[in-house]
Amino acid sequence: KIHEKYMFFEQTSMRALFSTHPKQNQDLGKEHNRTPLRELFQIFQKLFTQFLRSQFSEENIEFWLACEDFKTTESATKLQSKAKQIHAIFIDKEAPKEINIDHSTKATIEKNILKPTRSCFDAAQSKIYSLMKRDCYPRFLSSDIYLTLTKRLCGQQKLTILTHFVHNDNLYK
Image (cartoon, rainbow, N blue to C red; front, side, top):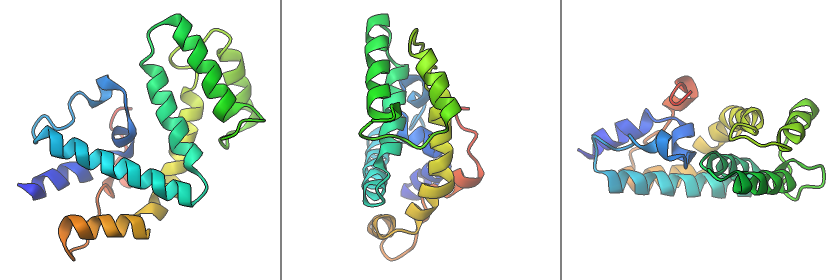
């Protein structure tokens, strides 16, 4: 039974793990005991964030999560306020947690946040996701933090949770 849960977990993309968007996560765990699976996702997310912090790149996951939260905002007033906040924290050239995106993407965001929509950060979010997928996540899979997690979950057996996402990342696209 526990093996089935880990197989499901392996086949879930990083995008699903870090998503806070309710429509994207509504089906997670329908065929499995929802609470342990959700707890495992939360543990994984915290460990990945801890790893990114140790690599001085936690702004990537923080930006990703801020964008996911932003997409759930319904009020136009709150959308405007959150857009300005995300810009100030992650996009502005003086941002305390500036993410690494190209000038063109920044310029597009600065134009879009004048009249923000839920998709105004999508291009930057996609670029940051790709960066984490190509660079941060593979390093995380070989990190002590991750290896300790897998040893705790499976004794001495090395379980490679979520390695399929590197090759199969079409969930929620």
